[in-house]
Image 1 (cartoon, rainbow, N blue to C red):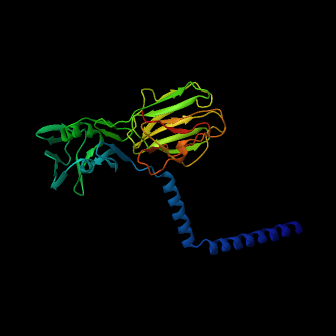
Image 2 (cartoon, helix red, strand yellow):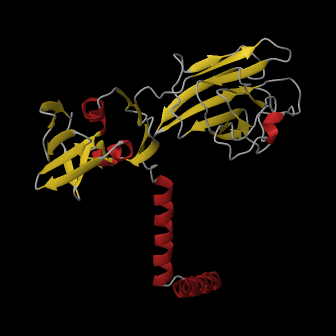
Length: 310
């Protein structure tokens, strides 16, 4: 009997503690706090899962610029008027389901829901339906390869997957090679001035070309046969090109300075076995110089050096 009473007393104490804890929880977790917590959690999940905004980078003699891409029927679309505005005199007018465009002396007519357009009395296949949104004429991204040569009267090159459009012969080419000096020099040569943003992490240096019409070499991976800097790779996506230099030494990559390099037409990264960066004229170049590039010299075993004018 005594044992049974003890259990009942203990059970009663436990029940009262449980009720007290529920009262405390009920007093603390008010509906407002619960709602606030749910909203905060939802915002955090949305920010984490939100994809990067897609955009198209356009390179031309007249201007280099970027335009947002719009999703239509699961495909990438772009405003045709916005593509042409920086390039010449252009106007457009929506009339019901029809949309007419005039660029300099070239006229074109489109119709919403149709896959073909008329440019200077010639049919052009769009590869998808034309769309009108708030009086804006939207065309499939892939249609620019057939539309623009007829409208502009010159060649264009579209890297559709990477969202990069080259109008005319504007591409900037580069080579990377290891010079046979002692210490060895890793030299990047560009066919035109460039201004990449540069970032580093353990074992890598990344040059991102957001506004430069860089195109890659025939092979995306370049190997140098050097223990400190064995390779560099080229890739491009969402309107930007990226050159990644790999380093095997533990401290081969680190932030050395925020100085920039004056460019004539190419840039040299000098690899050495020294642990300290080499001083030179590159360290005093002005960041406001229109010819600047290599916005940071970031390789511990490299320095950024301007090429002398021949």
